[in-house]
View 1 (spheres, one colour):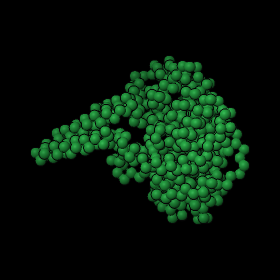
View 2 (cartoon, one colour):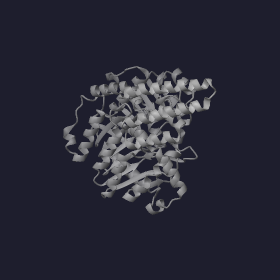
View 3 (cartoon, one colour):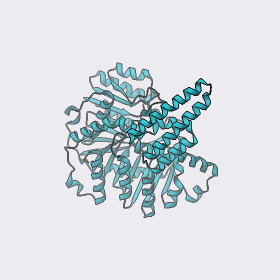
View 4 (cartoon, helix red, strand yellow):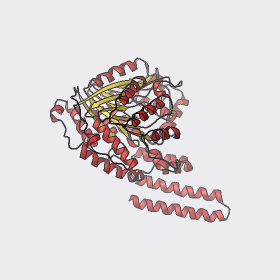
Length: 503
């Protein structure tokens, strides 16, 4: 069916071009272009309709095409074609699945430990194992890092301790103070004979200077850009970004979470001020999954496969683990919307409370319904968001969801100490997820993400106490006051929400 539509789409564009050429020769340029785009937009609308997408997405695309034919046409070519996503990442999906089955699939779930969990907790980790092919580890140590100062201090210390290899994968890397410090340290370690590999996202780090990259390469660091976009305005890859933040050192120590590499994460940006974020230090068995995620991303971009015991079977000292840790990757290359389904499972399995922090909160219908039903059922549902925007359309779109959530009994807080960038969900003070995934459609459907799922670890307790402290530096929204906000803001929020399925 999709191949038939592709052929028809091509024929429609050819006919439109021929029709335009005829009128061009007669001097009717403007009218011809208008007719050509009208034919193309109409055909795209038919294709979208027959793709059987979610009704909300279908209506959104039809509204965009109807209201902005020229803009909508190019926007669809860049962001709207599901079959192009499947074709682009189908090979990566197969190779990743094979690697995870081969490396992690041989390790079975620890049934003795699982039986100690509640039924709903067992279901979550069995689901995570089935979707991500990674078992839960009971031989890993974790530590929550609550801001940039603590995070980078731990990262720099761990980098200095590296003895064999250093692997870094980041969405944003900046050529500023902390960026320079990390660069110099990586070059120092590479010159000392340590293997250093650095993978950055080509779009997230588009401001990163060539001099920065060339200096790394000259110093012996292997550097690669994820999914380069040579024609940014005509390339659909622009929409699928590597949002992961991973560091693996010697296969034993790892870091994952919300902080990129840049001075603003240290609170040095005047507009944002204090940057409230959460990162996770990991040591032990679970680091192998982070390693595997990096190695597969590295192979996808460079063609260099290095799945060998040197990187995947480190010698681990005895670990006094205090709970379970499970690393899960998600992205447009996975068969299922992994993190979204796990978040949904966490929310619907809650017995007492669901606490969420996300800088970009744009839930789809499933997550939105789960949150409202949980609150209406008497579950303590709290959502922590920033009180100032860094992406205005996303900020206003987020606020359009607040009235119905507040009416259902969800408690919403706006962080006022600085900029809140933490990405976490805590359930019943026992389960937690911390990583790179926001509670938005881009993280659910488009970006490459990675999250750590924690069960009854000291880190969960720390996340709970940090969340309570953050609420003390936040304003709780009132349903009555928020409902009476001005028509101007309602209009902006409603307009922004129209684009929610595309954000």
